[in-house]
Length: 206
Image 1 (cartoon, rainbow, N blue to C red):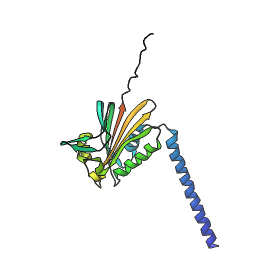
Image 2 (spheres, rainbow, N blue to C red; image 1 turned 180 degrees about the vertical axis):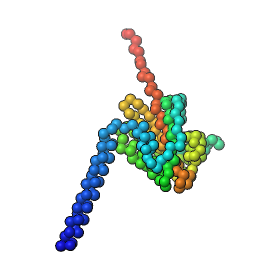
Image 3 (cartoon, rainbow, N blue to C red; image 1 turned 135 degrees about the vertical axis):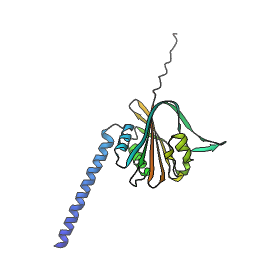
């Protein structure tokens, strides 16, 4: 009799767990499908994340802004990208410190999952990890202009996404860095691209 009651209680507990998991999965699915993807939502979620403290932000209009689509390599004494694109638009830059023993690489991985879920809107153009990205000092100082991002080369992560929301197009750049276990940083560049005029071809009368 005792064994029967134990089995019944165990079965009931398992059903409760599976029911809760089902609700969680439905909620996650609703988040992915109910709203059109918007890169600004990632910024809002990071600001709301209790273990992320925004320490820097700026916005500016840029022309021929360079976005690296490769690692940085030293050539003839200069650090350069093998492949880049130059774009015009409105550039917003954000830097957070990830606190309370959370890892910036883990937070970046969570953002990647959200972007993968929005595959119709977001396309990965380039990614690299660790020393394969090149000099951490160059990424921090030259590319992002934020010295706090200078951390261990082995711990850096870099991602570039092309994002389209209706008629708006963006480049979304993610970079995570770690100076030590309690000095973890995440940086985002969000470039809202200037619309390109349509090419009008006039046909001669004839």
